[in-house]
Image (cartoon, rainbow, N blue to C red; front, side, top):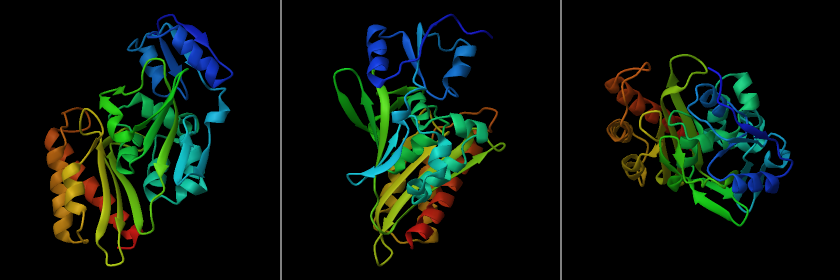
Amino acid sequence: MIPAAFDYARPSSLDEALRLLHDREGEAKVLAGGYSLIPLLRYRLAQPGLLVDIGNLDDLAYVREAGGQLQIGARTTHHQLEQSDLVQRSGLWSDAAGGIGDPQVRNWGTLGGSVAHADPSSDWPAVLLASRASVVVRDLKRERVIPAREFFLDTFVTAIEPTEILTEIRVPLPPPGTGGAYAKTERKAGDFATAAAAVQVTVDAGGAITAAGVALSAVSETPFVVVAAEAALLGAHASPELESSVRRAAAEGCNPTRDGHGPVDYKRAMAGEMAVRALRRALARAGA
């Protein structure tokens, strides 16, 4: 299909982009890499009056450490994340970055665009949830820092206001003894996940888990934290019984629908399996 008619702007600064969103509140859409928005435009599932292309805003593309956090600019591409030495230190983030789409998608698609789009089957939201990241958004008047666990409100719905732009993701630098992993099953390479799990754990010198983050994608209306799995992990040691508890919590906590990726029971089983696979790898990386 052909998209509906819209105005187009390519601002040269973040302030200019924010001014456009302010002046055309409620009818403007932000374009970053385009791999989420352009298909919606083609099928007229999105019909903005104005498209604000932030492709010129290179100052929003960075990966750096500051203030005890990993800070990632919203226009950082999946490929840039995959190649970053700072990201390579986190098994959770590097696992996800290297498994998104195909090389073309990874070279053009952006972290901020994916997070703001909030597709329940995309990879990054679960990673943000498990690593307890925060999302930074700005409008003309203020900057807000929103915990990822308060950011994803519904299918394709986030806490971003119409006049705001997502500018940065902030991830707390994990303490020693921390490991993370991302595992997903898909029909074919580069496809959206059938079920995906992000796990991050911290273990003490005796192997007990002192902190845990577990989140799932593709098996509910939104990416979500598996609270029961996190509770089961705290204070526990690696064991088959612990894996069984996490598998059960993931399978019972999700709410999948039947579609071309498989029936409900299959998706529940895969949610449990991906959670356990990610847990095993995270514990190994943590030194447990």
